Image (tube, rainbow, N blue to C red):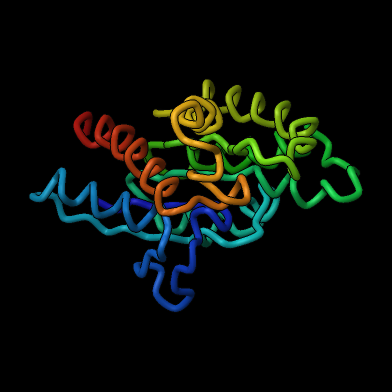
Length: 205
């Protein structure tokens, strides 16, 4: 079973550019280990093609070679924080309809050109003071991600809400010091929710 992880730096997490099967040091590596442990009789091929700094438009540009040509059985996508962050300093926010169009094209291509099951992970931001103003742009884009998930996803992982709930028991910086890039605790948190999602898809095949 071929499982593809796609996204930005949160997915990338130092993965190898020469060998996409070297999964890096983030949630992908933990999620793969948990999945293999849960289903020891399945022959998995885990591929991490996350690229640090990517936005939805970058994903679309490389989608043919980095997703369609691979023909994964399951693909997960975690994208969207850079679509806000890269515009935050000047607050020349990316138009929401452009973000939606790029993300939608990615998902349409998956549906039309592969038989892959789709896991969408919501972009998220932990409550850190220097990025609170990101919410002006981020929250509408999260709503777009949720809308697209209702249309296209086989499983949706609402990470922004899940991390908000988790921050009641632990401070936000416990999960991600800068509010975006997960600590080992944050990576494990994402991986555990990923396992719950992928388990449903594996059992349904």
